[in-house]
Image: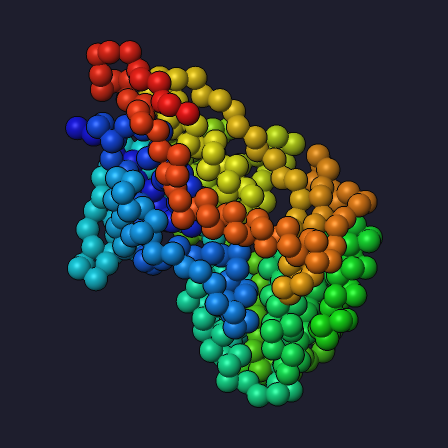
Amino acid sequence: MKHRIVVLGAGYAGAFVAGTLARRLSPADTEITVVNAEPDFVQRLRLHQLAAGREIEAPQLADVFGGTGIRLRLARVTAVDAERRVVAVADSDGGGELGYDTLVHALGSHGDRSGVPGAAQHAFDVAARPSALRLRDRLDSLGEGRSVVVVGDGLTGIETATEIAETRPALSVTLVARGELGARLSAGARSHLRQACYRLGVTVVEHAEVEAVEAARVLCADGAALASDATVWTAGFAVSPLAAAAGLEVTDNGRIVVDRTMRSVSHPNVYAVGDSAYAVGDNGRPLPMSCASAGYTGAQATAAIVGRLTGREIANTKLEYLGNHISLGRRDGILQMVDAEGQAKPKYAGGRKAARIKAGILRMSLWATSHPTFALPRRRHRLAEAQDAPVETAVA
């Protein structure tokens, strides 16, 4: 019997883990299956661009995993039975169950519009491709001078507001910040952000608590009512409830609690990566939900799975957060590095150079994900229990 590895989700973290495992483990005694609801790879980091009206690449997962030996199951995960080691899925054929020996939970996060009355009914988000396309259709229907309100001044909110303002200058864009705009940035970066918003015509409303969203306006706690023909909610993200329902140890918001190797502290056959994982970084602080964290947690989980299956020593890979890369439309950006405590360093980079660096990071992330076994060795690791001879050494 081959060791069955099932990866839930084919975003940045899931596709990276599946491809790396296929590169490092022998197909003679391992079977890797990726379960994903959509047939193409979604560049989540660029969904605000898609919503604004730009075209972005979406490689077909069948092509991404073609020739790797990875099995692709296009289906929606409906349940995880951690005791039976079974995943229930639903698809056009009615679905079924997939058994696993090792499970990698990489279902990521989605926009959370549940905390404020009316947000779920009237607001859009850019956390998934379908919702980004719905927003795009709405923006397409708006005439000159109509209003767009983006709620939330985190990285997603800033990028969404500035992208829409640059791509659709005929619309009036407002960005609602709960506190000071760019509060976590250095003083210089905050000033740069304000200048960018001014240049793009983005109206900034600071220290505003949104208490309700209606079809044509956003209501704030101080009594202000902001006219809105399209409200974009970027003020929070949530993870899938499947892990909690399966009995895994999770945080209050549903993220899977893992050890230093990304292994579930309650279920040793389960690993979590990306936004699904509650992982503590090398600085002693929880890693934030981000593409960078997906890469670091994915690398650590892969090293742990390969090490445990082949009897090799498990290396501790880096778990760090170095900074934020913020796009402000296509021709401007901010690179804000942080210190070991997660606080913004005084210096930052801004302007076209920062925009080019951010664009390069996006291209590199897409290439690495869509070429999961680009360095496929001639010989891969065999499982320690599946052979009598010494474990093979992979060719670098």
